[in-house]
Length: 631
Image (tube, rainbow, N blue to C red):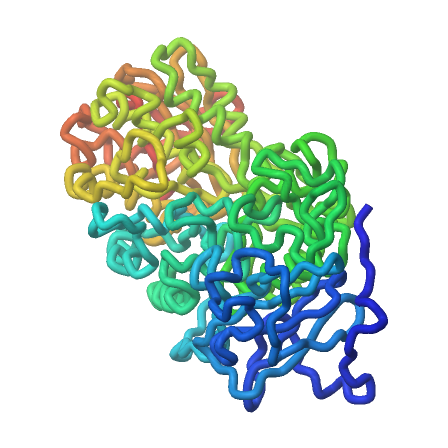
């Protein structure tokens, strides 16, 4: 059972007659002539703050690095905090300033002296080092004013900071946020209008996927720290690119975790005040699930989410593995406090930042995840398992006869009620690791750059950019990166030049998806309808539209067979002239493609077919998609 015990009665108290004199907030708070400090440690007998401002006098040896271990004897402390009640401690240090390092020193109930990094530290020297006093309001945003694209116009590029672009892979350090700026022109050429950064919170070591957060308020020091993230967001916004931050609230750590038994208290030898101390603590990543039922922990996580949007101007948050917030084993919903916490944060974001959005990695297909009803979690969108698995299966299968066009249709047309409440993709960091590889590698491990890998991986991409949903690609997908994702292996940017035609194809598809030339508005619309499905021929055609009509109606005909269909008749939504906007088989995209002659214009005649009032005859190259829009 979790304890919410208040500080002991003999602890010093802040003057109750003058509560307005206290600075608001948690952690290190800048005040007029110094810094105020507040920390939650309900089982502490006493709390001191120490750092550069007092030569670390509250640490036993006077050396900050010795703070990693518990100390048996108390030193002479200069800055003892006062108890405020409800487990909070507060004090002010005149003359302390930004850039100085600090720690809290906690006298536990059993007499131990415990040194801890501030849980709210906005910057740390490293995951086992010290907090750094910062001023989140000091950054010059240079008048930055940015409104992110709406979900129906969003195209996401998922990236890992440490491997996206590493100019010197042999230097023993991961790439930094600065390096992304060096490749901004590539992102602009590609046409994406959002980047999703894999977790940035300070983690153990320098190399990581980021899903082992040690200090959730601090930006990873190896990536450049908080100011570099602000600079990156400002530059991205100046180029019209939104920034989505990946956050991890289903567990913390498990290593380099100063939150563990933070003030010395725990039950069942578990994590103490920030964690469940019973059967609910267990996760696949360690025994470190936060206690979603405890008000101070709920506020801690809520404050973190709001920090990314407020202090860093992020445009959205992607929550990692939300099933492990609402349940212990991603099964039944047996941690209702985890569900209610998600709803609280998401509804608060909707109210405070109505143009921002939250995305769940849920992958269970629960409509309630994206519902704002009383029983919903109120996410704006969720990664969709209904799309990724059947579409990957269709493009990876080596035997044409084994492809299931019905499953492809269901993947394209599935909806939670709003077409853009799902994120669709064929590659993500999870899909290309943990026993799986990049799509070209899965298609043809012996020749991941060859004909089949190129043709079928780009056919999958064509569905990503034309099906209803928010399209997402993973870094390097646009230039046929193969193998599998590792946090120590940076992208090979030579492939950007070698497969420049494939990059152009992705760029053309993204242009259609965003309706940049005003001819494919239907791809930003809610509606999709099957025009034709032939399982033996492996052909599937569908209609996308918003309001319908010229410049809106889009038809996608996808051939999942290694056969050229020279004359293939399908129903059409309307008679008249239709223009081929993209033929994924064009020689301009790859010398390996067949380059079958596909008419630039197609005339749909007013002759009924399969319940539709018009029909047209198309040329369908092997393993290709033909995308047409109504003139």
